[in-house]
Length: 406
Image (cartoon, rainbow, N blue to C red; front, side):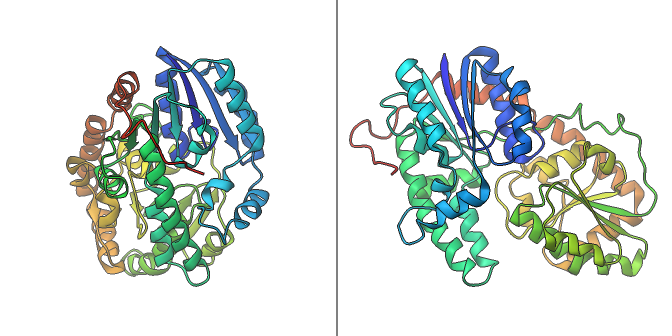
């Protein structure tokens, strides 16, 4: 088949959540089909990855989005009923290239990764469209509003409301919709009753995250958090842990360290290094070398959606994981059962302290967790489901009078 694939960030290198999922999807599709990729770059450094990514595509088209200009462009719509996410991810250059491709080539399928990219195929006619919402972004914006102060809380709440309506229109135009967990599937059914929605979970490369490959480098008791530190839920999570949980852990383990590993740390995250025992690394070339230093991985999210790749990667590496209950609920029951959960600072600290003190328990949890992740979260299984959906797409809810996404 000929597939037009749209995604909001260049899916290479696969070193963060949205890129990991998109890259594995693209690689699977390209092995069997002819895929034209249209994508955006909001980090100039990512332009260097066009050449390696092009090896997975029939055709690759990349357009630059400048974050500051994109934010200003989006803010012009603040007094409208349009979600700001949509103009943020708009590029006239990419729109022109997509239109040109639709006129010149005959596509069998359109694949939209992230709802905001559906705006580029408004004129695509009756080509079956599969949309991967990944997580339901409108729900995340609504969660953001709960944890921020005015005026941002009002802006985030507005975004959640209008993005939900936009997602409803995207779902109505899609042959089927894909999400990462059953929780997200339920949200989609609430937003757009009648949508053909399918759960296609993320996977993890257990061969890459093999604890036997990278030698352990454990000295002082170390707790690790990994993730893109420009992402608001990650920032909130590490702030909470460093300020509310780590001091409780250090009561019984005075040498305990909290390692925050991930690119683009904000000023608020960098300031956490003033707290005794906190280290912020920024970008690292290989996260495994830092996982090898850790005794416990944590995911202390109050804002959570979908499947956290950081949990899958830590468990694949054989580390025990402590998370909030909300975070663990995105996992399959077999894997979630291996995650220690706590929703207060005291509960989370107690779980971490127990794992630091009981090496046998930590090792058992870690290795059993790795075994279960390997069985439950195989990319091959998830991608087989996705390819089947592409090859036999269900029809849209209504082929007539479909709502415009404008």
